[in-house]
Image (tube, rainbow, N blue to C red; front, side, top):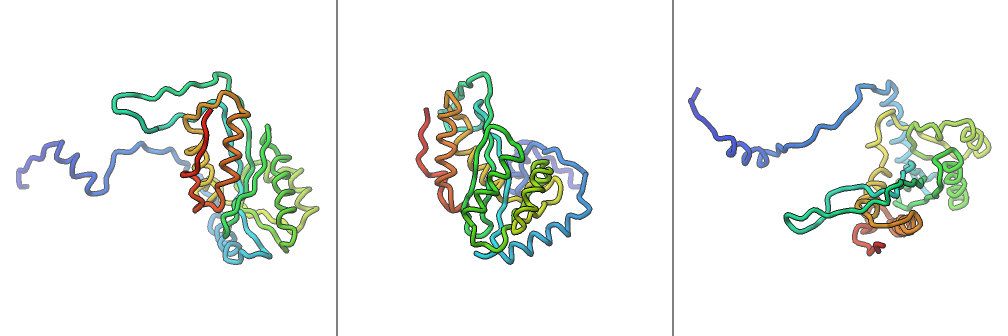
Length: 225
């Protein structure tokens, strides 16, 4: 209408000021949980009732790979950091629980992500919170949380209750932020040559991150081998 021409470089300067950035798209699923509202309502109600007698935890598992996660890092302009990888990858797994009120962390580790690992975490919670009248865990729909072995353990320990998240809704599980911090602080671009050295750093992080968030985990001194 006004016959005004704007150079592309000008538009590129204006867009960030308007909060518009160039960003890679993320794949998503159109699958929706028909019970999403009901499940989230149950979780909100449990969190509102979170107390010493009725603690609520966010629970999840995380994979630890010997081959480092490659990501951005500080370096001199024009120089790209080289990260040596061990070559043959090895895996270790953590099952963790993040207290929904205090930010305290309970975790166990193992070489397999199975029902036994999940039950080991439940047993640890049972010992540490033995005076609680009920213990509720917000969990995803991974198979080990629904297995026959897990269901048998839950039936023998009725004060435990699992609150299942809607399917494909990991952003509702706050322990995901803990796993992100673990990777950002320890596993990204790590230089450990064997799993023992890596796990020493992983366990150091897990033992010092609480209360999370707020424990200044990213500022804690970690050592690299």
